[in-house]
Length: 164
Length: 306
Image (cartoon, rainbow over all chains, first blue to last red; front, side, top):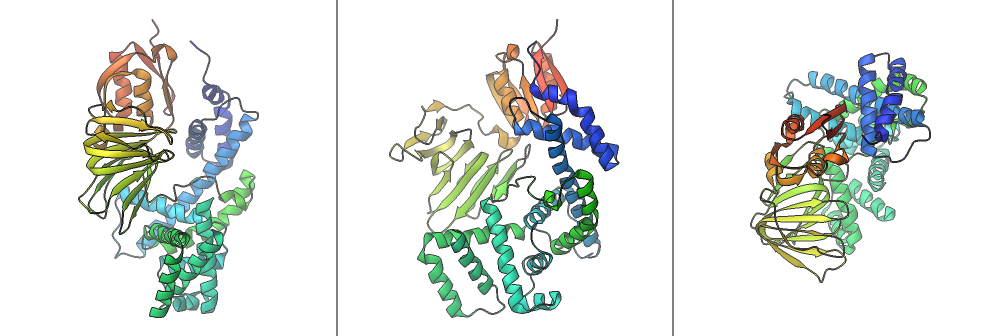
């Protein structure tokens, strides 16, 4: 039998530690187990070659990103289902559609990271709720020209993200 | 480009007013046609709008609620995880720019505006640009099957290596690593490498070829079932085990590979792409191998210990 795959080595050496590290922070061993597993998937998908200088630090960095993503997704899922309850006229989507909807929400949510509260509020009112500038100005409590300015900033922000 | 994007944004904001005069519209049209870069920038705005259009009716409320809920939790997590608020950003590149995408293991059947059929294989990204003069499909990643509808406008697929022009036809294009592979199932296509546009090659039904940006490989007879994946199947005849596993691994997360001593074992058969676990179980029956699983996402086929 040839030598171990580097990932195998990484897994054997550090999986237990990572699980513990996550469990300590999440206070939930099922989540910790899932996220530890997901972290190794990321490492596999990244196809990192060679040996890592500081494997635990590397794993922890990836795990942190996944924890953040998990909370992001959960908060969106929960908020979405609550929003649906308030709008009985909207048919609840099938499980498959729901997955696509969450993906779409998650992507928009990420895209809006880094926008100020007001800019974000104005962008959502105009672009997702379809309000006019006047109605938006009323809702947010600013002038119409402020709405235009924030909308332009938000659009520019999104377009430039595309470029990165 | 940033300056032009800013102009496009400015136009969008002006055209989005409750009332827009015909004069403003005309001015915008003049701007739009004045420079191809203007049109390009405008297209980016349209793509952004398209993506936002996919959000559900309650999206705005949902996003605001989720954010508020998170804001409270955020400080705590930031502390626990040892990251700043900035940590919320940029952990994953989302497949944003593409019009249509599939995730690993997913397939998607689409009918385009002209009636053409487009099937996306696992982990694929395409952009679709249709205008008055042409029908253009940009394959950014993965594999697609195109079945063209009758239309006066030419249809072509752009890959990183060049262009495949449809000549009334059904064909499969795969974006590989530095190479594009085309398999024609009906009629013909014309292939033009990006850096050698004078060297176009015509491939007929039943033929396959690979091309790089500057050269075209030989025309070969196509595997009989190049588009079997559109029906969720992989059909192989006398393939190396290593190649079969490489193909299957495109449809699942994680590592799926084999030890060198079994890589060259040959096999034939029809496999269900959506159930690669069953395929793996089957391998142990038909070949002198054993499947070793470290986790669900790390699987290696090895020689059977005797």
